Image (tube, rainbow, N blue to C red; front, side):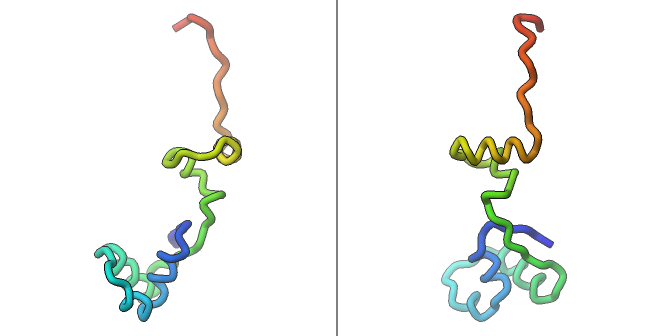
Length: 84
């Protein structure tokens, strides 16, 4: 199972007829489409608002940043002053 936050990508992989109408599709998309049609992989929608990896890959509004930071239990260590 592969989780994606892009519903269009899931639609393209699941619907081969829709694929034929697209003007430009990367080679990896054709590979994924074949694996989905063969039943080897399954694509599942996962909203970006719940994706904790966005914390490390995107600029986020403060509220979203704090929500994802708390979800992975990331905490700031207490300062040790000038000690090294």
